[in-house]
Every structure is written in C-alpha cells, then in structure tokens.
Image (cartoon, rainbow, N blue to C red; front, side, top):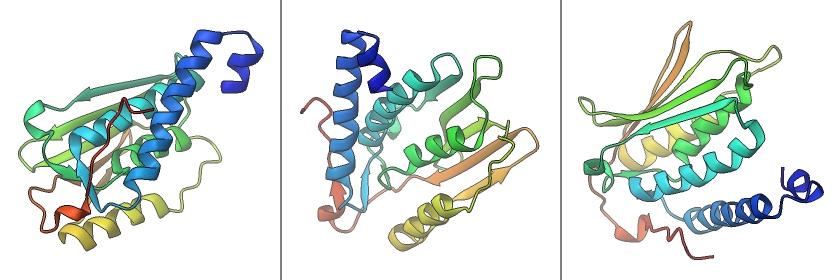
Amino acid sequence: VLDYLVQNDEKQRASDYIKKLAGVYRYLLNMGEYKIVRLADEMNFVRLYVDLIKERFIDGLEVMVDVPNAYMDKYIIPCGIQTLVENATKHNVVNAKSPLCIRIYVDEKEGKIVVENNLQLRVNAQSTGVGLNNINKQYQDIAGKEIDVLPSESSFLVKLPLIQAVKNTTDIGAFEENAV
C-alpha cells in the first residue's frame, strides 16, 4: 500500500500512512510485554490499524464502533480486538460489491466486548484457529475466563471478557498514541 502511494505521488496519503504505521508498530513493540491493557488504549490502536487496512480495501470495508466511554477503563488483552479484525479481513471477501462489515460493541449484560462480522468466506480460506486459540489461552491464563466464539450462517461473532481489576499493575501497558 505504501509503495503504491509513493509510486503514484500521493505524498500526503503516504505521509499519513507512515504515521499510522509507526503508531501501530509502537503499540505492538510497547504492549507485547504486558498481559493486559486499558480498553481505551486498545481501541486507539484498533482505530489506527483499521485506518491502515482501509487504505488497502478502500470501499470494501466498513467498521462500526459503539463502545461507551464507561467501559474504556476496563482491561483487555493486547491486540485481542485487532486480531479479530485482521482475521475477518483475512478469511472473508472484502470488496466494494460485497463490503465486509465489522461491528465492535459492548454486550453490557455479559460485560464483554464483541467483534462481529458478516460472513462471506473466501473460496480458499482455511482457518487453523491459531489466533482464536491464542486469545482464549491468554484469557484463561490472565483472568480464568474463556472467550465466546459464535459462528452462524450469516455472521461470525466473538466475545472477549472485559477484565475489571488487576492484581499486579506491572502487567498493564499504557499507549500514548501521539508519541512518534
């Protein structure tokens, strides 16, 4: 994507892309050592990640986020939501004729964050389940909880538990989005 922007002399878009890419890498490098992060930090990271992949899919990807501010101080595993967004784009057709719609919202009744997408599987898409298994293992180790994976004929839905409190604050990462 970046090469395309540079080759087509789209300087401002290339510059914006580089800044977002730097933010994504900074998050990955900084948060990799932490067990949990604030949901607010994860959502900032997801926003940057979605902006990056929208450059690739342009009109074929719709991401709707409805996460009330009241939940932003809860905790989640680093890159959990991003992994689910990445999996959705990896396993489904994404184009302007058949947009992939991803919704990220809170199931307030269960206290979980939900990532849901319409199902339009690629012909050769085969999932090993490694990403989901890794997320589930992290939740089991950290919070003693499991994720919910709820596929249907028309959608794929995953619920991640929001972690209320932590025992050891050294396990918590903090992400400063504007530090480049």
